[in-house]
Amino acid sequence: MPNSGHLAKTLSQCSRPSTYYGAGITARPLKRLFTTTSRQHNEVTTGPDPLDEYNPATVTSRKGEAILMKTATKPIGSRRRRAALASSQNIPFEQLPYQCFQEARKVLLDDREEKIRQIEVMRQRIARLREQDATIVGGDLAKQKRLRSMHNHLEELKIFADINDPLIKKRFEDGDGDMNRPIYRHLANKKWREYQRPLMEQRIMQMSVVPDVLQSLDLKADVRLGFQRKSIQPGDFVGSRISQFTPRLRVQVFDKGKRLVTVVVIDSDVPDLNKDSFGYRCHLLAANIPISPTTTVIPLSRLSADSQLIFPWLPPVVQKGSPYHRLSTFVLQQPEGSHIDISKLRDRYAREGFKLRSLLDVASLKPIGAHLFRSVWDEGTAEIMRKFGIEGADVEFRRKRVESLVKKQLPLKKKENRPGLPSKRL
Image (cartoon, rainbow, N blue to C red; front, side):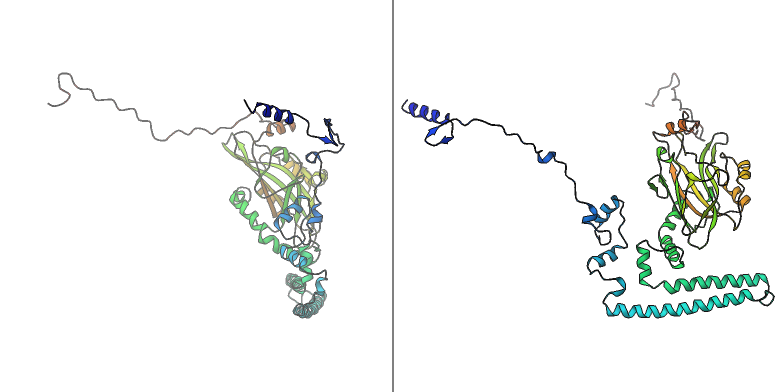
């Protein structure tokens, strides 16, 4: 073959090392380099601080709000207000350089001064009425009724004096309002009645807490319930491992003054096999608990056993096969100046078969707030029942088969042909 020598020469050249140093040809030794630095995908990197990227006072995107909420930082005020602050200079709110805004503030200040003069006049009238003899104004009942009406009008004037102040609204949206002032109680009550109160009423009526437990209920206080760090929305299902702990309760009232309340937690879906129906069980009963517009947290786990706690917290459990149980929490206001003797209530009532209507009549209590959550059988219920010594973990409920009211009909017999007669006519 004429090209065999050329092909061999080409293969020999390809097999030589390709590194040239000067005029000669040498083989380049292979070396493996080692570094003490880690690779990029093995490096541990820390992301930027969300507070550096998203300011709680100026964040406007839903993504930024969600990131801040995950870090337990709540955005300040409304989104509209944060957008306005992000697009403006750091000028105090009351010094914004807008002529129309400043003129409107002058009108509001003049109106506030007029309301303050009316407040002073009303206070003087109340003082004069207190000094007058009851026989002149028509008796004690008429005098007290008139004083009560004048006090209500005085509270309305206090609200009207500050209702149009933009700084008041700003502090309320920032969560810096003082609940000792009537204006902040009015704004908080208005906000609660817009969403939380209708939501709670809807849950209570939908799940038939009224009239199963109470005949009627007029909500006047905002009740929030939670277990440890988990907040419970009205009607939520709560697992047995979470509800084994004593709940935390917050009650916000919107009228001034201190008062004593009674807290009751009732399970209204306890199976009663003897009556083939459902009964009641009291999971917590405590009385003589002081609350006010500024004292809202009720420490149920730290109540006094001598003067407040009647029945301590009993974890709600649902036996297997039973439908979900409704756990209703009621806040009952005690009469003014009354103190309940808890020893008498211990002797009178028991956990099983507890009737809330009877307690209202005996102690003259008035329901002002409520909350509701539900419980079902789950994988931790049997463990919780053994832990707290509750019987019935090995019991399973099944629906009873209902027999049909229509009598069973026997199958029709086939007609037999008589012998000697043809089956068909020919």
